[in-house]
Amino acid sequence: MYLDTLYDLTIIGAGPAGMTSGVYAARKNLKTLMLTSDIGGQTAWSSGIENYLGYTYITGAELVQKFEEHMMKFDINVQYTRVSDIRYLDELFHATTSDGQEYVSRAMIIAAGKSPRLLDVPGERKFTGRGVTYCATCDGPLFSGLDVAVVGGGNSGLDAVVQLMKICPKVYLLENSNALRADEIMREHASRAKNVEIIFNSSVVKIDGGDFVETIEVSDNLSGNTRNIAVKGVFVEVGLSPNTGFLRNLVNLNQCGEVVVDCEGKTGIPGLFAAGDVTNVPEKQIIIAAGEGAKAALAAYSYLVRLPDAELEQAEREAWT
Image 1 (cartoon, rainbow, N blue to C red):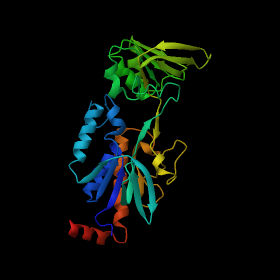
Image 2 (image 1 turned 90 degrees about the vertical axis):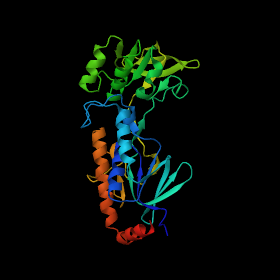
Image 3 (image 1 turned 60 degrees about the vertical axis):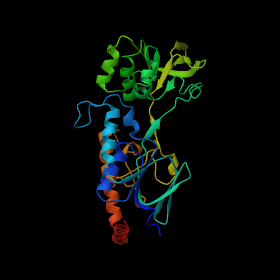
Image 4 (image 1 turned 45 degrees about the horizontal axis):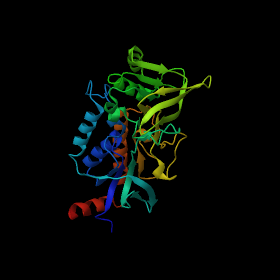
């Protein structure tokens, strides 16, 4: 009875894991649906990528465009929407989206990625879009010629610093520990720049201004003393949280909120798989996410062809089309 509305596979998310899953699923002739609020995920935020095989250097936006062009050559129904709820009923997966639509499939891959963590300090939400931003690649050019602050000393924070130090007269890098956690080459770039001031053991406690950001109040974690720093932009790079809120206890999550999977991307629920940064797989890298997406799609195909009525459904669908 679901013949014209039932999908073999629903993929949630269109980052490297989701798009690779889509390509592999389509090549296996699976009737595939992709639900996503954007294309590219975190990859689109990267200014430069030097460790994706086949490209000595490529921007995040360019790599996403390559991925998308490849994926769009296949018969995948891509719906640009946000998933609000997943239910597992009668061995089928029901995905409800924010616009009230419901999609049903025999198998599902969660590849929803991660979203930026908030500082959760006074003024952050008020000035979001008015000086507070979470993407240097997207918004950096808007702050050309202005003093800015970057919060976070990991790879994403240093990536933001490297971008901003080329266009901003002063860049403050705030790190709440006594050392930067980014790759050595990125630390070297920042430490050599004369317009970058690194402030260790520091935390932003307040963001203030008029219509736009004007100052940040910074606390010394050791002494407790505070000072105000005049900036026009605040780039928040304090990590990412997995996008798993819509799962509503459907699957096992670890203490970081990531979906727990085995080596095949299985979640423990028959037909439900997960891939990429939303999972507990270590090392969040583009190439790893893509590989995990391929594995999940192959595992989903293996699951689907072993369903009792799989061959009959396939024959009916080919006759129907």
